[in-house]
Amino acid sequence: MPTYVAFLRAINLGATRKFPKAAIVAATEAAGGRDVETYINTGNVRLTHSARSVAKVQAVLEEAYAAEAGFDVPTVVFTTKDLAALTARAEELHAEHDPSGQHYVTLYASAPAAAATRAVHAVDHPGETAVVDGRAAYVLLDGDIHTSKLLSGKEFKALGQGTARTAKVLRTVTEKWC
Image (cartoon, rainbow, N blue to C red; front, side, top):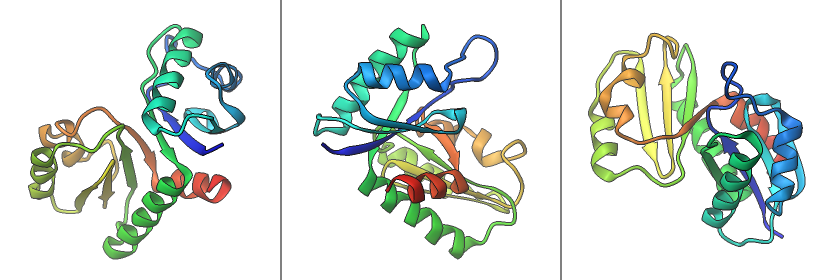
């Protein structure tokens, strides 16, 4: 069975979006996931599944998560091979740009539109670099996420709904599961 890594968006934020690890594991198993593991309580899940399609795994997980949590849980799924390549690209960009602040990667269910990608690449804020590549937007900041003009700009928002992780979290998940 193929191995996948799922990234859940907007859980455990405030009182109304609680989705504890045990409930995530139960819902993942109810959706046909096997060998389920989680990493930190922000929605990083490793599973094997008989489905051979990332889109199919995403759909069954989102349905099971909504049923278990009582609210929609947007989910982005990668094969372990694709996640390893995505993380390697993050490491390459980090070495190339050497940000003094944070390095975030926003993950998308599908690649953002070409026009939105071009618009983000055209944004020029000192100390802020974004590279959209496939289903990921790599953001390298000399500052932090809270003061970023790029992340709060309309161009970045036009990429669509994604879920962000630090490059460090992606590195750890990749080392553990890929």
